[in-house]
Image (cartoon, rainbow, N blue to C red; front, side):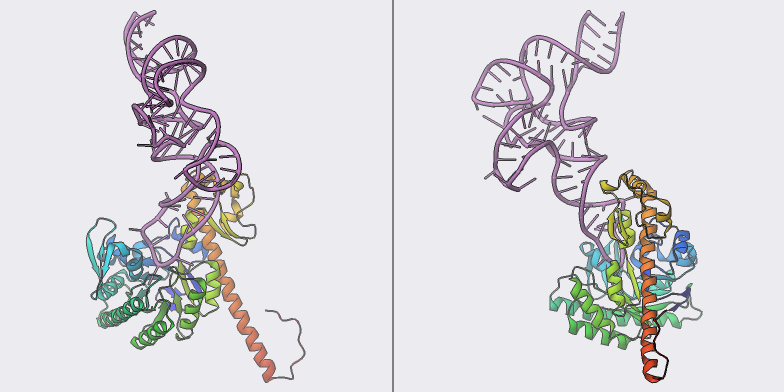
Amino acid sequence: MRTAHGVIDTPAFMPVGTQGAVKAMTHRDLDALGVQIILANTYHLYLRPGADRIARLGGLHSFIGWDKPVLTDSGGYQVFSLAARRTVHEEGATFRSHLDGSEHLLTPESAVDIQARLGSDISMVLDECVEYPATYERARESLERTLRWARRGRDRFLALKQEAPYPFSNPGQAQFGIIQGGTFPDLRRASVEETLSIGFEAFAIGGLAVGESLPEMYGVTESTASRLPVDRPRYLMGVGTPVDLIECAARGIDMFDCVLPTRNARNGQLFTSEGRLNIKNAEFADDPRPPDPSCSCYTCRHFSRAYLRHLFQAGEMTAATLNTLHNLHFYLDTMSRIREAIVFAQLEELRQRFRRIFPAQPADSAFRR
RNA sequence: GGGGAGGUGGCGGAGCGGUCAAUCGCAGCAGACUGUAAAUCUGCCGCCCUAGCGGCUACGGAGGUUCGAACCCUCCCCUCCCCA
């Protein structure tokens, strides 16, 4: 897919850099890992250091020194995760800042304005991520509000685009709509229909991985993704585990983001080709092997489990860095395998088709990529 | 030599007659984490087990007072501080 700051191979995984930094990483680390796009957060950057300040400093890319694509989440997730600190109403969501207790109103319009000031490449519309479990009524009312917010957000976005000259740093900013509807198939279907009719550059599936079962999550992903336009990226927000990436890519998802690889790295859990590995476990105290012998990341090429465990136990910051490097490498490597598998599957499909169209072709040799 | 303070679970440190196997912190052990209020959070952490308002041994040592002692008394051992 193409953005104002470059092309992204899909399916893509976007590391989360809420406050304009992927925790424990420098941008140089991200470059070396092959990261093509990161996520930042409207709510957090609005509270600190402030959207106007970032705009004055030339926009997010300039401010944080990262010239590749950035997607900004709208703060919709904070409506969910900071539920105890906010109230939702028709106008928007009123938050009490976790930093100083001050009150702030985030509306569909202000979420657009803030993201325009930030100058991200992809701006997300403000939505309400409904909790799980939720009653049908609750999910329906929430979805209806999300749809009204989506119209307002889109209107504001298009209005800003009309301004000439464009007053902010990224005139090529795109805006994604978000499908909600909880775990109710008809609500999801209605959400797709309505959100598509509003029209966005692309669409995301939100409100998943909030407590529902995996079959529910995969089911909603499959039925929803299948109704979204195939010529635009389909983004599954906040997902997921390595297995989720594969399961959901197989169901048509093109973009993922998740805090798991980075947060779990800081908490001592590594994703490896053998499964999860808790580097703080005593069993690794004398283990000279790398975390994942089949991994080619910087951490695995240079350091032992014993050393990584020591760094973690000792509270060394480097533990977070090395663990994060590994987990992000694992995630990006998984995505690259997924992309290969898709190409392979498409080639196989084409081959089968051509064998039917041109039956006189010579007999098979072993199929090779 | 004189005066004072104190010895509690791996460490630090509460407790000062019963509800104390003993607050809490650290260390240790294990687990969780899905659009990041997270380098966070949760559980376990004397020994035994059928894991429980269970059994056993415990608050420097030995006696004692008491229905009952980590807490009170006596003696002993050992630390630390001040003055000579």
